[in-house]
Length: 252
Ligand code: MG
Image (cartoon, rainbow, N blue to C red; front, top):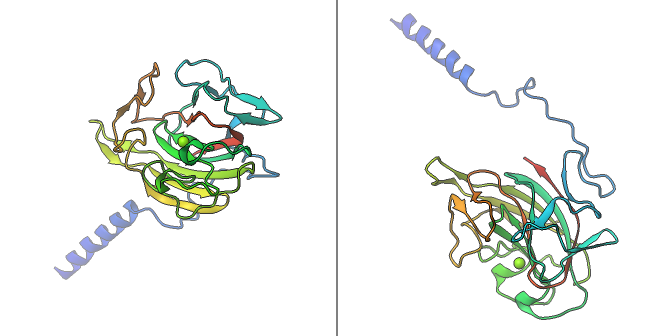
């Protein structure tokens, strides 16, 4: 009897071992080779969204027309009133880099000073604002997830100086019934400083109360945006002068 139990336990142990991934398996899939950032140039597997010249990756979100924002000397600047831009390509989980600069000429205060923003999946705004000695509500300052999370610290530079956002975005997951299975998460490094640490996103930042919906239409755009899959990015025209350069991402 004891021999039989021992034999059964041995078979069970062998089966369990076969089903369990071996951590640290040296023969596992070999990671792809990627050349990292060299002299400020994007990694070799990056999707380039603005290289200083070409704006073919973007269009206006409402009209679908080509970008009317100003490109000069390798820098993209909001042409106020022409409208928010949407990326032509859609994305799920990403690592993103974007450099931005509020105008050195200070106009307005609070939310009306150097306001723009990059929206993950067209729904979740990572706020850009001139937050150098410019008080506003804390979850609306630079480095916040708009109306949800303030940054851990204020890493802002003075207006007229370039700033960088490095973002890690985990897209939300919905089940087949459109119910949320896993929320979105955002990690943000502002000028080399961690300001959002895997923040769990409460829903779209558009409405007063954040909400998740499997089908989302944050703007009056023609195509229905299905939140179960990949979605485009938005770059906000909030009516202030903000410039951009070196915009790229890596799909994860
Ligand atoms: Mg904004």
